[in-house]
Length: 542
Image (tube, rainbow, N blue to C red; front, side, top):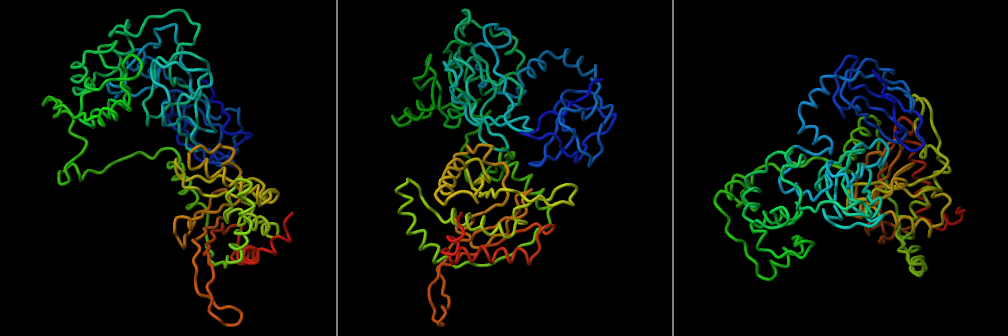
């Protein structure tokens, strides 16, 4: 019997609340099975089982506080699980590299570097974030057989927080990629194999026997892949070198790989080769009837039955975490909404005068820095908008800095990076941060530090043309505002004349446990006043 020690689940986190046990004492658990949900001050984290066994003791009750690096539960390893693994060598080989049992033969392009090759070594995927146990392989930047330099980007992986770039630990040659793009890779499991430079000479790829253990432990190739490969008869393994993505593209286009000249190493066919071949007038070669029966064309006739099939895609990355957090926020926080409209005519005029100076500094000045600065000024009078619910739900934690988040519809999904310490920054400094964070979010490369410790958020739905929205609070924050698009609408001036004014609609969502309607109305009036009469705001700038 051994204790499971609660690992580090975030930077600076020393304890967490045991929200829910997903198991009971006496239960048999499998490796990586979710066993508990714990809540930090940043997120709800799911704790997986380290190995198969029987749970003998739970050290905490739901609602209690668990300590990091202290026992969470006790588990007794099951001997039958170990025996089953030893009786099934194919399963053992597959689990060693954490691969899937249904890999197609086009993913089995092993050059060298399996466990039987002492000259190569596995790169183990390190910890890449708090509580993260797996990630999605987005883009491989290398291929099997490529030479890599130290610190060269090798692969982009997507966690539920950000796109992370994995670099090579040292110079060498890639011998195997253990995952295909869009597959899930496990933390602390092999990601790729490589031969570091300076190692002893090793067999060439072509000398590996087809009876090598890692290959025979895989499932048999599908008839389509076997038929195509047997017809080629080229390459070091009797196959034309090409990545799984290229082979998939070849199948979708209905062409033959041997008809396309490869420009890569050892005649490897690249995606660029296929596109160039098509531009030169290459046409699809009729395939054998058996192949056509095994895999139909990717373009389905409009009225065929297949066109009515439901397309199913798993929730991954930021989309998955957004789904979980929105459900959590909407079901645990009592929202109330407050709407108003702001006359930003004078604010737009001020921006036009300031943006010339900003352009000289290489910055594009939008309304967002002005809106953020006005918000930070108003929060000084109403700090409850910049607070959190703490303790057992019976404390208010007033936060020392105003870190304003902005929702960005980025490449990897909806993210909310935040500008730190807005109350201390100048408009130029805020504009610079807004520009940096927006560019990073749209490229899917927001640093995790930029996503942490937000205190209040802005959703600029108006940038996409919306007028009204009912935003959901970005927990553990207590307020968020949705900005509608600016419209030029008729309004009455002081003399009763109809004039054209620039009107922006706004909708606040507040946590009704901490903020009442009167508070948010008074706060909104102050914030609105700064935006409608920006010269007043300038008087209060530090």
